[in-house]
Image (cartoon, rainbow, N blue to C red; front, side):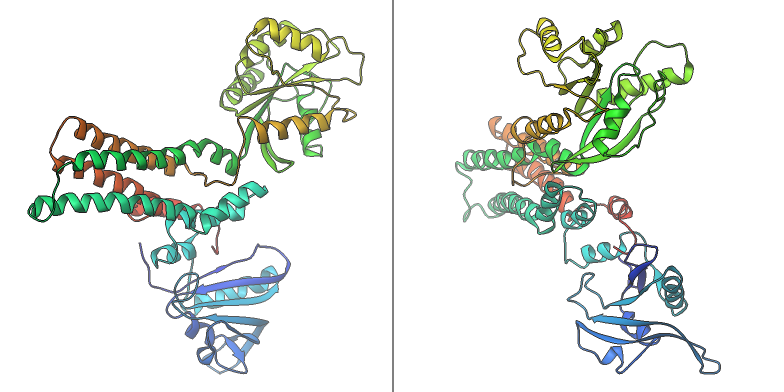
Amino acid sequence: MFKSDTICAIATGLGKSAIGMIRVSGPDAINICDGIFEGKKKLTDMDSFTAAFGRIVDRNPANGECDILDEAIVLVMKAPHTYTTENTVEIDLHGGTLVIRKVLELLVKSGVRVAEPGEFTKRAFLGGRIDMTEAEAVMDVINAETDRALKTSVNQLTGKLREEIAAIREKILYHTAYIESALDDPENYSLDGFGEKLSDEINDILSRIDRLVSTADEGRLIREGIRTAIVGRPNVGKSSILNLLLGEDRAIVTDIEGTTRDTLEEYVNVDGILLKLIDTAGIRDTADVVERIGVDKARSSMEDADLVMLILDGSHEPTESDMQLLDEVSGRNAIYIINKTDKDIVFTGEMLRSLLKNKNPEIDNFRIVELSAKTSAGLENLRDMISDMFFHEELDYNDQLYITKARHKSSLIEAEKSLKRVIESIEEGLGEDFYTIDLMAAYESLGEIIGETLEDDLADKIFSEFCMGK
């Protein structure tokens, strides 16, 4: 995977801004940048982590003339104590789109290659400065939308997951090495009673792995947001409630039934909780082919949702479609919203509670909110209910280490399976050499998490999801 050429990329957002930064990394980064920079001193003579003010110039080797492209502050960082572990130069320019593009083109003309997405972080990984969990956390920090997502990402970025995985692998490796030594030198290393001791150690390791796996679903919700499907029959106010939660008119709202034909997804931060709101088409039987596709997608969104908001029209008695939806939502993590309380109410929250209680006698804690999407009355009650669910019930989080990636969970589960096979071998009285096969399989699976046994194509895929310049 490692490439030793010199790379460059724009490290700030495209568009007009006060500052635009270009990052250059590689063995020739300082020498090449010296060739396009005019200042009081040469970049090659500067100490690491020092900056110089000057001009970026495009020299014409034929006549010695040069065009001044911009004034710049240039920061020099020398290997190995840099982000990529290579010589690195950061060029701070004025943030105009044209000038940044011209300086980038000048670097390419001088022999620098434009970096691939995530290539700077890939070089940090390959240089041994960070492991794969820390590399993945870089983009999670950039993409974090809530304090909890940021805290979880920073925990991983500072190496907490790596430390836990490395500690588990060290235990596995120690026992594997002891078995191999005992098989090769039985006079100095005894395996008497080793199976029982190993079984206890593995059960301890399994408990640690199980704790990590148990955080995976919650970790996904922190990182990706709570998938929240807003469902109901046509014209009950689904899109109005989406707009109300967003604080802007994002979805089209009319009095015409079937206005929403497709799902619409938006993110909203509710008191530090990231909701991925999915506004769906009104669910009803219809002969309209396009609308029927929307209804099917609405039902699919409801199936995949972490939270369902079922909207009912309080100004009308429940219809047959409403009753069918109540049955479909039953047993799911749901909030029931009685909308249009600004009108004459004929169906209240208490009526709905009684109806739900008759359908589900064993359940008491139905979450019901009376709301007016038109006047915002009841909005705070809805927000408080979401917060209460998040902090005190099945969506509760604390400051512990979370697994946020599907591949981490998959590798942990594979390691668990291998370790359980070791215990089975011990219980069946098999020879110690059988233990080492599954112990090393677990060791390898855990190594995939931190990148020590990661295949090149998977690593390339992970880094391809990064932004340019990072």
